[in-house]
Image (cartoon, rainbow over all chains, first blue to last red; front, top):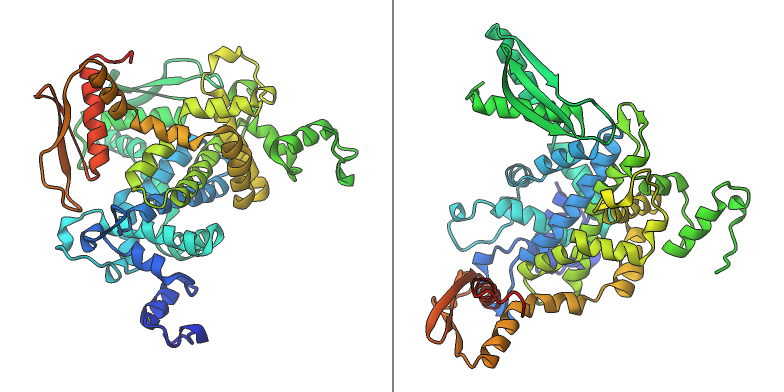
Length: 239
Length: 239
């Protein structure tokens, strides 16, 4: 992909990095140094300035917070009828270390990262750099641009919210499937009356024996919790 | 304080609320219903829409994330030479349940909250409503306005960052003061050479006996940890 560089960058020693970031971000960076910092793993910068290492950890702290806000906004609007328990769970899945690493590698972040140590040493390195990159965009261009990058270039292209949502239903549906296959009876019993604003308690009965309990303000969630417990206590991990 | 209402609000049944929010926020809300929702505690709304309670908990989820981002930004810029451990600790103090409640009551949020139950029942209610209010501003007016409200109307007026920072130094300085008063010798010994990027281990010696240890990537933090442990193990809680 050949992109015309703005005049001001024609003589920049970072011409190549500018161009490559343009491809990644969808816009030309203003302040290139903050992106360089974002890709600097702490193992790559033994020097300190005022006793502080020049690594991407501060940017990671910032980017993590910006990412959290953008994903909260996205979920809030995308799921207008779901409660905050669902939103919290969805967000924690989207921003989990493992998922961030997947996203980071999908956008090829490994090619930007400077490290002096063996890559295997730092398992969370890619996710960290990804968050630091978001921090860099925020510092360079503000909230809106960071939000656009996350939503349009990351989530829409590389994350399947429906698939992530499906994970939530797994325990309940998995255990129901299992019970059907094994010809066992399975019932979620409500232990306390459903009243709004009240904690709901359910218990999961398999072949008329209590296997687990769950509680939450939302019935579905309470059932999920009970299902997950049963799933684990029955050792169904390989379903 | 008498404020001229915009024409469009002259006939609004919510004229009083508009005016009062103008005082609180520094601007007139566009969408008043989202603020009403922000002040609706779950105990006040037994009705559900599509199986979901119309309470402020979703807005609280959103506001919590926006607040986290704004405070991260504020700390990132205010403390350019402090590491992410410090920034994380500072933020968690600023957004702690207890501190949020203090801030919420300082801006008089209790006068807005609708509850049907006894107020004492919900300890985190004020902090929750405060976060929901931030979520409402974000939905109504966007990130910039929410940021301005938090920084200019809350932090600058009601939170003393220096004082919050001082809390961090408490354990080390408290135990040093105590040792001086008790005429005990007190030394923080470095157990491993200080190398950048390496975990630093210190031990706290009082009268030549090891009392506690601490480790962190930052020496000052490692000392704090050791001091805090000693402080507790020596039962100095009432210093």
